[in-house]
Length: 81
Figure 1: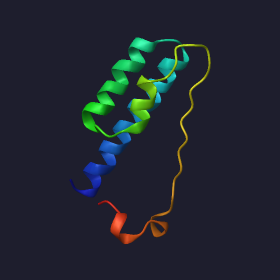
Figure 2: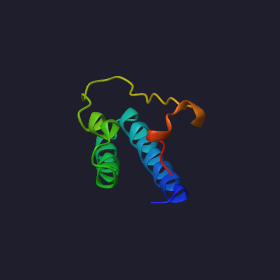
Figure 3: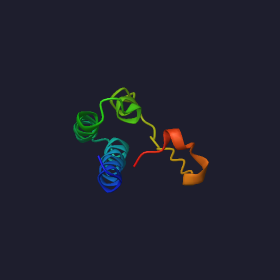
Figure 4: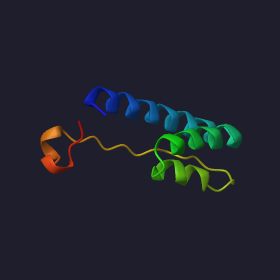
């Protein structure tokens, strides 16, 4: 996968996760489960989607933590694209 395709795929997965979190926070567990399933279909090792599927059904709010690092911070061996 080239750099542009990888970036687009990551953005799509991020969008699906954002929508899943919004769905679970408004009480729509069915939509959250479907969206998390789409994420796992594209990225079977996505822990955020797995966590959403395992989220308790009681009241509360789910939030995503995103940490963005500048490219120079990531070792060359770990960079994608």
